[in-house]
Length: 405
Image 1: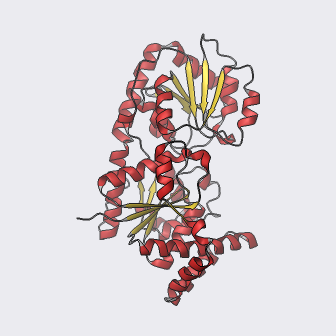
Image 2: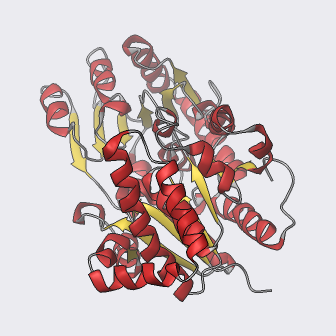
Image 3: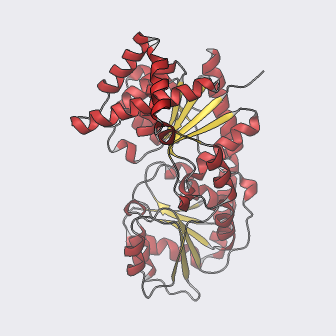
């Protein structure tokens, strides 16, 4: 049987900070799905840090670039105007779901124009199902493209920021109109259930982001090398980690921060005098190499979904220290595969790091347990097969029962 021909849409694809989407696309292709990738905006050069990103970027359809052609934009909307009832219902949907104010209305009308071009591209390519990641503006475009073309859509919802403004992004309407919603954790699913009508809850399934454990090689970790990977932005809590370092006294203690973002200059100033290296974005292969050399992975975030970088660290056999927030406890079991501390707690974070660095046996046991967790529950191959089951089940009218495989 030929599997569903898919299109994936995000606001910006591929990005160095969203490698989990690239892995999911690759895993679905390995199963046998044809997957076209689409991006609203063109990815900045700073995100094309490895061959995977450059290859995906070259083959991705860029919606805004296509909309810059007046002829293409006009032809797309004339095409959908041939079914005026559907066109006007889609336009009304754009107006009805717009955020409040003139600016909100204007943006949703722009999204409607983008949706017309995207819908034409998908129809021309014979796409049978459109899937979105993140559920913000790009999901609005996906919803409108589906309304114009009749191509069904679904989306993966992550959080946490989408739940800060659920009414602005109309996740209730998006969830109601989607074939199904993939939620990255039970916590995420519960947050969506808070805003969506109860009759839709049975279509909210838990689909983990995942990694390929075989890509990561556990090794002996006996030093004091700490590693952080993530955006250098306020939500990641890096100042707390820098403060925690000031009370640690270990020979050869060093923290490497992989990533970039708006707070980099400020953080570099705060880190003066500390054993800290800022190395910017790195490719997937380079991150794997850094994990193999590190001794403890630390993620002091204030808000997260279920961080894929924690999965990568655990697959590498690293003990992890993270904050007890959102879906993180569904991945990291306290005192088994890592240590969890309250967010924003400098003393607690410092104590947890010291505990792990002081105890080689604890490190080793946590590393083994973490690797086993990822292999069992966060393996991208297994998660892609479950997602494929959802795509096929909903297309054929026999969707699977239950939130989780």
